[in-house]
Structures are given as C-alpha cells and as structure tokens.
Image 1: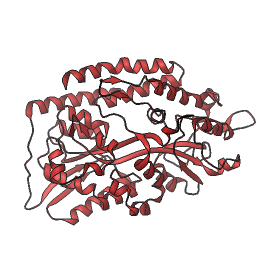
Image 2: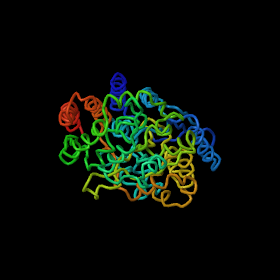
Image 3: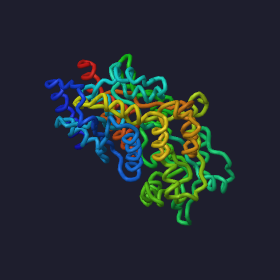
Image 4: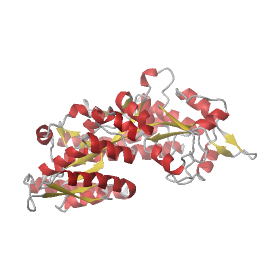
Length: 435
C-alpha cells in the first residue's frame, strides 16, 4: 500500500507537469548523422542479455539510429524519470500502467506514426492491442503476452491410472483427490491441486467461469457478478474438498523457492499446476527430466462454450510525451515487433508474440516448440485480458486483498466482492467526471 500511495503521488506530479508544461516536442536531435535514443526496460540477467542482442542487431542493421539501453529500469524508476523531465525515448511497462499514464497526458499518441510506418493493428491479437488504447487513441504497442494453462505431471497421473488431463472442474477435483498422498501421521506429502499456487490468482479462474470486471458502456464494476462468485467458491473448494485447510497451509509452508529446483511441481509435491508459458523455461533449467504435459484450464461443468479460457496479460512499449526523438523511437518499436527480431526475442525469453504473422510463422515453433499449446490458445482460445482502465492497479490490488481474506475464511465471496465495489467505485466516479 505504501508503494501504491507513492506511485499515485508520482503520477499526480506527472499530471501537473504535463498540464502546465504541455511538452509536445516532436523534434529529432542528432549527433552527426546518427540519432541516439534511449530504451528503458525491466529485464536483467539472461532476459536482459537476450534483448540487448536484439538491440545490437538493430544498431548494426542501419546507420541512422543508435539505441542505448538501460535494463532493470523498474516502474518507479521510469515514472521518476518522466517526472524529472528526463524520460527515456522508449519504455516498457506492464499493460495496466499505460491507461493510467495516458489518462494524465504522460504518453505520446502513436496513431499518426502507426499510420506513417504502416503498422497493421489487425496483425495484433485484439485483446492485447486494446490494452494499449485509451480513449480511442493508441498509446502502447504490445510487446509481450502471457497466457496460462494447466501443467500436469504425467508420471504421477499414471501412478493412479490417469492417462489424460482433467477437462472439467469436477474432473479436476476428482483428480486432485486421487493424486493426494499422506504419510503415516496423516500429513500431506503430495497434493493434487490447490488454487493459490504459485500465488493468489484473481483473474484466470474468473475468466474461465465467464466473468468480466467492467461494464464500459455503463461504467459499472462487475466483479460481484454471479460468474465471479462461482469462480471464487470453486477456488476455495481446493482448501475444503478433499483437503483440510490447516494441513494444506502447513504443507505449503515447506514448499521451496518458486524459481528453483525446489519448486513444489518439480519436487512431486504438486501434481497439477496452473502456470504461464514462462514455466517451460523454468522446467528446462531446473527440472529437465520431469515428464509433464500442458492442457487448457478445465472449464465449469456443463459449460463447454467456456473451454480454452483464462487470462491474457501483456507488456507495452511506449513513447513518453517528453521524448524529443519520437519518430526515431517509433521506428525502433516498429523493428522490435517485426517478425524476425520479435520471434528471436520471444523464443529466447519464453514469451508469446502478439502478432499473428509471428504466431503463424512455423519458424517460431521451431525456435520454441514447448510453446505450441500457448500459441494455439493465443490464436484460437477463449482467454481474456483485464479491462484497460486507469484504476486497473488499484482494482487488482483490492481484488487480491479481499481474496486473501476470503481464503482465510474472514469473508464470504459475496462480502469480498461487495467490499471491492465499495472501495473502487469512487475511482470510477472520479474518472467519469474528468474524462
């Protein structure tokens, strides 16, 4: 909460700067015949090295623009730079930041440059493209896409006579019971499935149950819909049927570090696990011998139309309003999302391209064959993204807080979502007044 208040404060300062200063420069400054631009992103380590390789390819491919990179540039660092009037020329942030920054005038509208560079919006997965749009204007270009599926340990399933992953939520709990083991003292040594591993998931199962979170036509919060209440009650069942909640918590307390060989899925402590596509790279690194499969998240009983559901989320490239080199910045963005460098980066990072031309390119799956199920979900699935609204972070933070209370049996599902609506509705009302 302290960080949230700090970020809100920073954003308010940004709003004041842009409302007073009206920084609208689009001029290009050069050093000799070369325009040097800065690119700040959040990655480091092997992911930072991979992206640096892409940047080096760009720098070596032409002589007009040189890109200098600052890696590990956190959200707060990027916001502080914008506040101080010394922003990068290109930045990368998680999707929900774009609408907030666009709403206070901190980002450059990209529509004219999209048209000038002949970037085809129809080539992008619509759910992701829309995350960069605010008020009918495009402010962010999707660069990363995450989706989620059910990982299952084939060996553990075969031990109990199961040869295929569960397809429905009822089957999921039947599997969970069969896949659970206890020691002679009645303590768990293996769980089939629990819903808050690796963390409390506020969106995936909600989308699987057909819920949404905002009615944009009527400016109404919809997290209290019956679909989301059903999703919440489904998630709590993983602590009640077939398990004992306190024993589950005790067993979980012994789980190893997420990004390590001691991850519970790698240690056969958990047989079924909902994870993103990046988990395939973790398996390659930490548990290359595990015999696993990937399947769509199970859908609610009797609702096959909701099959292949779940959450999509993205990361966005943006040009701050204060950049003096916007044209060069967008040419670099256009390069990053062109097929060859884009497939190279996504395959190396374990991310899914957001463009159909890369998703449909056979070369991508040659580079990253483990991502084939996620590519299929991205192209033909039923997954959804959280709505592009400027209070998305505050909304998600409150959803997470109330779900923590729900998992602790402090509130019912109905009470939890009523609390969310009560807390977030003033932000909706304020947004409606000011836009």
